Length: 193
Length: 193
DNA sequence: GTAATAATTTGATATAGGTCAAATTATTTC
DNA sequence: GAAATAATTTGACCTATATCAAATTATTAC
Image 1 (cartoon, chains in turn cyan, brown, green, yellow):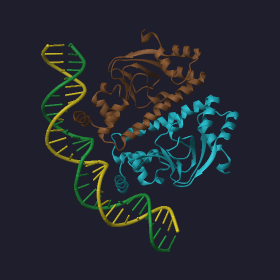
Image 2: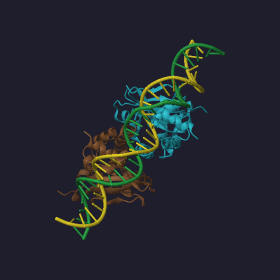
Image 3: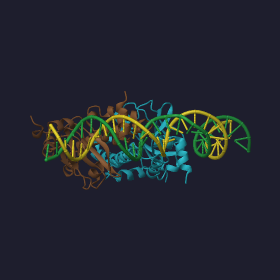
Image 4: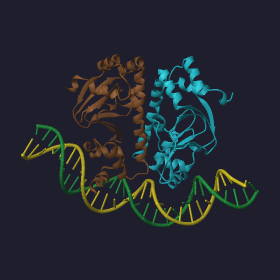
């Protein structure tokens, strides 16, 4: 069974939060489409408004922005997670975030217009959004705490914990910018012990 | 007109995000209750599960946690904002966050059970939650960015910007722990220029 | 499979901001 | 409104991590 032919895994994801009626299942299946990205491919360019949200089946996507000509990684997304440029996607305005593929990635995507249609016609989708955002919320708070009062090493250890399944697949430079430390420091942290 | 007698301001807040039916208005008015806190008063103790969410009319509440016996400020909330211990409130489990009043504060509160009732019976409340969480989301991302790669001074400048209306009312030590810098450093930053 | 390019490591400094300690100033409390 | 307590400031010193530079290793493209 090829992921290109089925929306099974993503429906299972929704069912972690809400019960899906047959009607909603079929609407979702119609509106969610498969897509794949080559390693290094630019998934979304910040010069546009972000109109698609991607749900990852396999691989890793990264959100980043440019500061003083350098890419700063914002966060990494692995299987079973949604990625988009949040403010751009929700507010339909431009924002600073780019998305690219750290490795070959298989995903689904939904267009913002389809999502709005679903929100308007299936109140349980609003609930899904509320509940799934809640979990992301917790991660944000934890991350904020891991960035205050902690040494570079503690930050890295925390990073390994939050990204336990994918951290070893992310290039050092991207990890360093994610943590707000230099590559050199991160390299030395990895070298010791 | 005393805020103790009316839920007008909070209804206006909801209407920034959704249209309120008469039925929902009356349900909200019945379930939302006024409360006030003295300066320094503990609003919520982390030893309990957080069952109330507070909407501030006047004053400042602070969320903090204890690390190595010291209070670390997580965030500050002024007028027109909700405060609770997010994970505790939503997951009905204990978490690390305390809430106290930095100054005399007038607020409303709603019990989590009433909120659940509203979510279950008024789909527009789900929408309200989704939309209002979205704005908080943006603030979190900005804060994460302000904490990476910025000097102590830049962090403080960013803090002044995000809390432009209340920053001068928050004691130095609380600001320092919020920013993840020492009191001494913050004092020096304030002294210069 | 070799050349070109990119990523990572290693080394030698420099510095922002931490720590500890004490002095000063502001705020409570009775 | 004086005494007690808490908050903030100032000073001296130290350390973690940044910076700059160059060497090494890994990856990509032809």
